[in-house]
Length: 265
Length: 319
Ligand SMILES: Nc1ncnc2c1ncn2[C@@H]1O[C@H](COP(=O)(O)OP(=O)(O)O)[C@@H](O)[C@H]1O
Ligand SMILES: [Mg+2]
Image 1 (cartoon, rainbow over the protein chains, first blue to last red):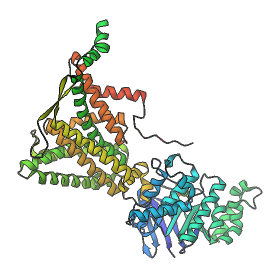
Image 2 (image 1 turned 45 degrees about the vertical axis):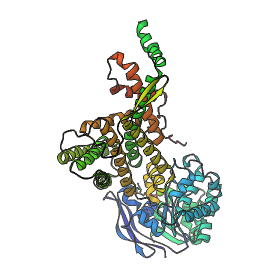
Image 3 (image 1 turned 90 degrees about the vertical axis):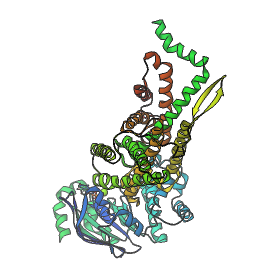
Image 4 (image 1 turned 135 degrees about the vertical axis):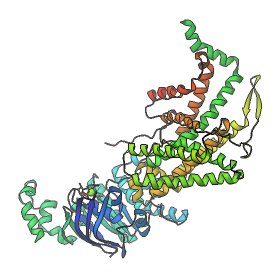
């Protein structure tokens, strides 16, 4: 396993408990999905791993996080990037007044190799994201959402990570672009051996590319399993994929009790 | 009435065309103070970019660094060693600011940060006064190898007089602004600084260490302050009243935008030249001493026409 969370609790501002006993694992070279609705605690989980939590006055109060066999819950973000864990934050967060290429180069901040190695990696990133090469000299604030998402992932890639944490890469992108982004992520996984943990509300797309998934609700893992199992799981089908749902909207209110019971069982 | 209009709109220009050599002299003097204004504004810009803090202590940092340098030389140290030690002191100051102000107060509101920098300036005034005494000191220009004397050039059948000290100040300021401009646009650290300015959380997420960037920026601002202090101090003398030159930085910043290095340079020149011209050709008729407020007038006029400043970063909005 490249990443192991063992029943972690996360508290914001010393009092607001958001995660309760979350455990999850990401195998080496695996793609794992962290699923759940808005406010379920997906971003908090990723921030706990990358330790960005400390800058939002959040803290892991219980449990442990092992990245590559080393405990990291009291580490720092730059330390994690150096060790090979990069967090691509929700909302893309490109540096708007920097060009696309400058954005990519900031991703190599922690690296000690010479500029020729970095230049090679830049070409590697352009190889995976040809669209980035086309807009390399544009300010990142002015390119489309799809390009920004690619820029954010490419920027993360420049750190040569072994694990990437992707927070809702599909958010506010057209379905075709979402597909394109996920295809590239899969390719990165296969060819570069980067392990991936994706937080997504778009369960459909996430389970198409992931091999394993965890469902988070109110800060707890309520369900986990192989991706194909989850895809066929009745609850997931009903409540997230809307396949069985002829009255999909009303399900949410009427059947939520039953759903919870089944998950807890 | 007509007389007044003539004095405002016609007289000064006739005067300029009759004595072009004098005009060149006035422009030169404006240019020199402009470059120094640009330097002091540059200190603000660096810190504002990296930490969104409006550093009230910038003016004091200028005085404090100059005072340290003069004080160390007066204690009998050779000038080069004193200079080196002053640079060291500015580094220690940068690290202390990072430890005691920035780190504990990260994520606090703007006003808390401003209060903290006001606190810092009181501390520096007290500390500087305690160590080096309160009375004005004179900058030992010769010991520092800064040229003195002056040169004469003939222009337009007349001549202008250029102080070597002024020339050295202008050259130094130009070199500093250009170097920093290139540093921030082309180097790894410069990119990281602009990244922090754009989105400090995202900067953290790619492994940029804010602490390191903050120390670099405050140290650079300290060195810029020291340079300003040396040349400004050489033109008058070194005392805490020097800090009022920080007041000149505000109109420069309004003009140039708070985040642009070329902006502060152009802004500094506009203010420096503008106020010198105004004082000489208009101000004298009004009783003189217009430098105190003309800078603000110029800045306000520009602000009217260009609300984002000359070089303010475009605020990128998406729908
Ligand atoms: N900085 C914070 N301080 C306090 N509460 C927070 C903070 N960030 C998130 N939360 C709360 O934690 C819960 C989970 O948020 P988040 O992890 O962002 O969920 P998700 O990414 O699944 O939408 C939400 O109820 C949210 O209001
Ligand atoms: Mg989220």
